[in-house]
Structure formats: C-alpha cells, structure tokens
Figure (cartoon, rainbow, N blue to C red):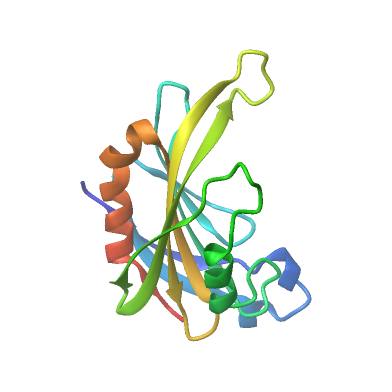
Length: 174
C-alpha cells in the first residue's frame, strides 16, 4: 500500500456560519490508502471511498471534527453517552464497546455495530447488504474527532487494514 499524505483544512460547518471562519477552521493529517479516492464534504468531513462489493456498495472511511457545542454531539462525553444508550429503534442492534486504544497519542474510544443498506434504495428488487461499522472517537483540546469505517461485511476484513493505516497516521491539530 503506497499511501498519499493528505493535509486537509476542514471547512466550517453550516451551523457555525455566523462565527468567524478562522475560529472554526481545524486541521489534521492522515494517510489516504492506495486505490481509495477522497472527497471533502461541505460539512467539513473527509470521506475516503474504497472498493465496492457485488452490489456496488463501497467501503468508506470518514474523518470528522465535532467542535464544542455541535448540535449533533455537543461534547466528547455526550457522544460517549449516546453510544452507551440503548438503540433508538427496537429493531436496531446495540452498539458494541470495543477495547480502547491510543490514536495520535490520545486515549481513544472504539465502538462497532452491524447495519444494513438496501440497494438500489428505490427499486422493487431491493437487496439487503449487511454492513459493519467501526468508529474511533478521539478527544481534542476542544471537541473531538470521529473516524469511521463502514463497509459491506463481505469486504470488512479485507479492507480493515486501510482503516488501521488511517488511524495510525492520523494527526489532529487540536
């Protein structure tokens, strides 16, 4: 795997548009796995797009910064509390707490869950694709980072090394 070094300047989220742009700009560095494409999103996150399965569902790695007071998760502790809570829907599997590890010299918290995607979503012949999602929450001096690996179960083990490489190379600037 010949990774490319990316330095990304995250754009401020739309919810923070009323504050100074310089105050909300946050940076990080990480490796982009060979063969994966990258796409910065308008919400300030980075999406790495990997191989697709037979149903054209791609493996994804996302990196996102949550500043303090963010409407989804106002703090690192609020995110952790949500993961420990029962699923919102009774039919959803619970989130698994995985052993913690150090990411970028910081004690990170790891979680995982099983999910499904239905493809194509608006078809009479929709097929269920079993998915596996793993995420690492990394505290920052203010707020936290969330690194997520989401892949069809058929590709999960094969592509997990790409997520491990991103975790190993991740360098938050906050």
